[in-house]
Image (cartoon, rainbow, N blue to C red; front, side, top):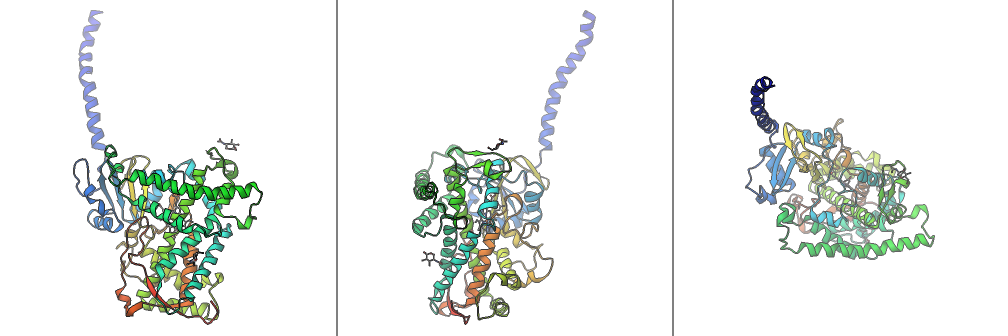
Length: 512
Ligand code: HEM
Ligand SMILES: *[C@@H]1O[C@H](CO)[C@@H](O)[C@H](O)[C@H]1NC(C)=O
Ligand SMILES: *[C@@H]1O[C@H](CO)[C@@H](O)[C@H](O)[C@H]1NC(C)=O
């Protein structure tokens, strides 16, 4: 026995030494193996790069990308941020590893105002989001839901009449177009009544401001007690205002249903369609049968309506206004678009649906507009797990900003990227925006790409075609096209910094 122990002693000692050594080695090894963060500007302790906050715009990040490359890292307080500015990295993030990169970041304000992510746009990737998305794609934004398409046509008609009543006078085209798209989404969502629209726009504007407001608590949570702008009160008030507004509308719609007075299939609005899934208890499961698997609460309904308002109003308005502005700035291209309209449609009648497939140059113009001015310049995603991209480490819960604006102007993908030249899209084999060409992603790509693309493009096509076929446009006060302000402002969308004002003259010989 003793001998056995004596013999074991060296082994024991060795174990005593080796085990900790192995531990230590493992530690070192792990640290070694961990990849570096992507390159980026050096930050300060604790606050990181927070002093660069004002550079977190599409333009600021594009400039940084020139220095640090297509994937760069910033640290804002506790938060890791990655900016993606090259088509190849975008493909990695939106396609190759999309299962990791398909969550949405949300600030405290966004979480609160979306009823804790009860909508689709800010829901994390998962069963709930999947069912909401199915509902939106199959019911709300579907081509089969003809009423949405009809409200686009009617409201464009209404806009043409407004312009026709102002021939020869300066028209604030920017404002006109914003009311157009607002009218379209409002009507698609709530039905034909325009009452209360002014109040609703006020609510949306406050939401928009709160979405963009800087809140220190988003970056350094233990500083959340500092609230110099009184954000918490404003958030509560904004949501209360929305509750008051939409609850009334929901109640009216429910009353209609209770009275068995549901408008026939062809005349329902989005609230009607959503109420078909209403239940007091939230329940979402993954069954394929939509009707059985989704139960929406009031909060869901409100939050989805807000998605439609935010996703479908300013985006489309920004694209229409930029298209007109670029064409006025480039008279050669304007002439060509209008000549095409005259050839295909003729000046004796208005543009109709069947004409669109023949309006090739117009299509190119709209593509070129979306390339230079993607309405949502930064796609915001969040990682669900640790990831590796291009040999760099991207920790879980990083905020990933895919710079669609910078990618559309990428030197390696586009000739003379800063020049507006619609004719470049006449060539076969040019990238399309359906999402498989990562150098051109105005609607994003993959799981989180825009579900409202068809509806948005329809409104864009129709509005621009009518405005250019029915009228010629001149700048007021002898302003030269080259003097047009081409700056944009940064927010959720990137509209023009100044509203376009122009004077219409009637072009067609038919009645408007
Ligand atoms: C020209 C018009 C439009 C453009 C350029 C556009 C662009 C985009 C982009 C870039 C995204 C984000 C993609 C990503 O994060 O990867 C998006 C998402 C979304 N868009 Fe659009 N959009 C347009 C019109 C519309 C319309 C008309 C609607 C609704 C009626 C709409 C509803 C949405 C919704 C709900 C989402 C969130 C989808 C999700 O998170 O799963 N959009 N859009
Ligand atoms: C939007 O709707 C309002 C209210 O019906 C109307 O006065 C206005 O002319 C419409 N605007 C456009 C551009 O269609
Ligand atoms: C989903 O809901 C349907 C209808 O209520 C039910 O039959 C089915 O068992 C549910 N599926 C799951 C996975 O809970």
